[in-house]
Amino acid sequence: MIAVVQRVGKAAVSVGGEEKARIGPGMLVLVGVERGDTPADAEFLARKAAGLRMFDDQSGRMNLSVSDVQGGILAVSQFTLAADCARGRRPSFDNAAPPEAALPLFEAFVAGVRASGVPVRTGVFQAMMEVELVNSGPATFILRSRPGPGRDQA
Image (tube, rainbow, N blue to C red; front, side, top):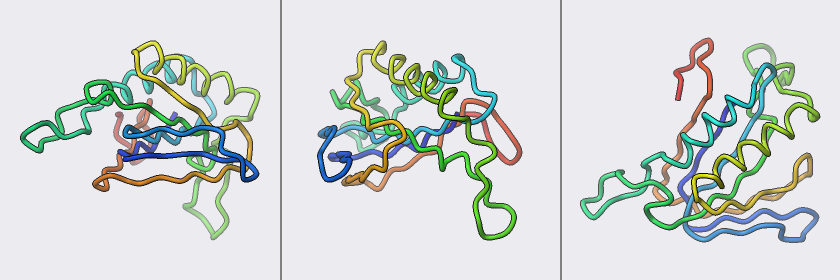
């Protein structure tokens, strides 16, 4: 699994012009599920995201997690994170898990974050969504549950 984590002042997701979820300060987490991912990947990524120290302490150092600052997480499924853009100009989505495999793993990620005590809101799986955010910093990180070619493990 792969996640793009952004520190936000606020974030919201809408479908068809109707707002589905909103958070104040916290994290926007875009989650991509790849072929071969397992519940262990979802659990690992949930723990990593919930515990990531990406918020500033009193000294201005990134020493605090989202729970330390009493923030929330807006989790949005995004299969395009699994795209391979190495050849040609059209992305290949062969690495993306099919929806019937991706949904339970996305839900496991959300459940894992909630189990850590962090409030989570979500987008709508497989919907065309509009995501609005105010990136704070900006501070953006890429997390992976497994290493791969040219990738570091999160």
